[in-house]
Length: 352
Image (cartoon, rainbow, N blue to C red; front, side, top):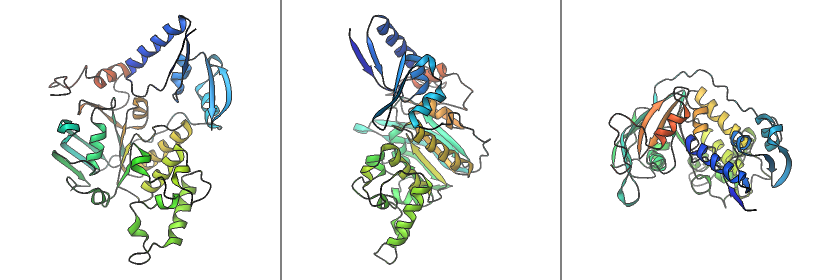
């Protein structure tokens, strides 16, 4: 009997997930043994006949899916009850915190990766950008943060244009950044936990012109670690020793503790278990309710729809549709994600 393995379907559209599952069921019915590895509860319960849960490298339980609910499966994964549904307060949008107009950004070989993108994120709301990876999302975020040159258009934060500024200059008026790659962009892994907690904020922690106020820095780091529930052995340990979820919490603690007006979060739940993901979701909602403008970019449509107040779908470097969660069915959203549908002037070509 043959066997195969597959991993998460986070990069697929809803229609593609359905096609994948039909293929897997056909293989099962032909006598193949299939191992499906995913952190998505609904998918596991939909496709699997039996489930085995791993936590911290150990098997903590196995069961038939017919005997499980999402709540029970989540509790097995995390070791405690998990709140699966987000309870969002009605949004109360204020002034525009982030405004993007006609943005053009080049990718590899100077080909346009972002093609005239315009949107705004108001204070007190979460604006989500969804789409299949590779449609300009990474280049968009890097341009917003000064990590990639802008070829055209403008970006402004709280009414102040930031196009062409350095990353430190963009952060200065109150912009925090949660990068999609926490290990390459968010942390310096060989450095200690407390050193990573002040990255980008060193000037505020100087006792004299050239020296850190070490006592104040350590106290600040300990306070943030406790506040954001970062599980550590010692504040002086390298950041590389932390799990992925705790590394993400460390970045979240640093970026949110500066009381930013605008938060740019790229793939904030990538690679996190459901418990760490729940924590990140709640912190972003708290920021939104405190009047922050939150831009969340994710390839996971379910995450975007559950957290965002407004959503833009990105395809071929353009935002091809904008809507509020609940206004559009998943199948139609998938058509926009694949470029099958688009605005009236849509040409359907990623090279146009």
